Length: 292
Image 1 (spheres, rainbow, N blue to C red):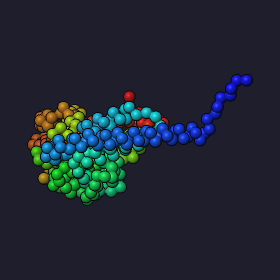
Image 2 (image 1 turned 90 degrees about the vertical axis):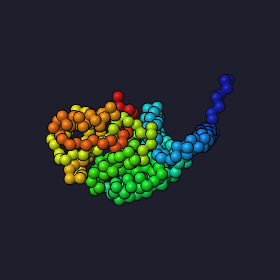
Image 3 (image 1 turned 90 degrees about the horizontal axis):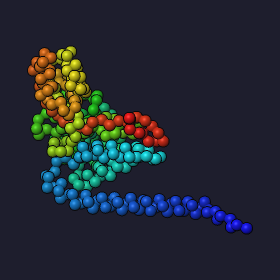
Image 4 (image 1 turned 45 degrees about the horizontal axis):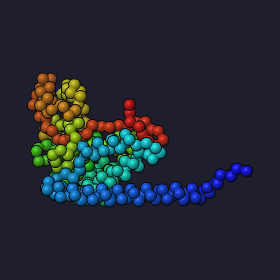
């Protein structure tokens, strides 16, 4: 009679699987500690730069895009992105301590959720009532970040004019880096920081356009340059627009085309830049796949 196959008890199978999970968890922890050793070697370089912006949004945008592009399986991309955001932001904080100042005038819950998702709980969260207070806090800091709603919440009027000038803070990122339906921290926000060479992507340029008055030709001019008017508010007896445009569109081109369209005395000032928007819109097994 042939030998009968020996059946492995379910308890033994579970024990083996749990042992494998423990092995993976240990390796993950070891890799995090190894990452910390490399960061320790970078701290001296960061200090030599004299402080400034602790956030490197261009690199982080690339990392987050690569993360969601390679991700597969049952683990939701929300969880994976959240874990990586905590790792990246915490190690950045270890390199150069910084705080996130946020405008809660449009409601604190969404801003706090966004800050915690993108920066974790180690990085201090400091709420302020109004965009101007956030910009003031960033200006006075050695490398803190400001978080402002990308749309709405215009109680401060044309707050973006506070970003004009070589030494003024600038918009360096738009969050979330990866946009998708039902994002747990999907509120569109701008990140403001003191200028730091090479920190921000220049995929999208942001401009403050100050005008004596509104003209119906302005939207057409912006559209022809593939630009978008994000907000407008009264300013200095006239009007100020917050405008986004592709990185190849320089301020001088805006001035030239507005003048050609009959809009006189328009002053166009750069106030920052950020990575292009990256959107996912297909849900499958808890994972959103990139749009084709």
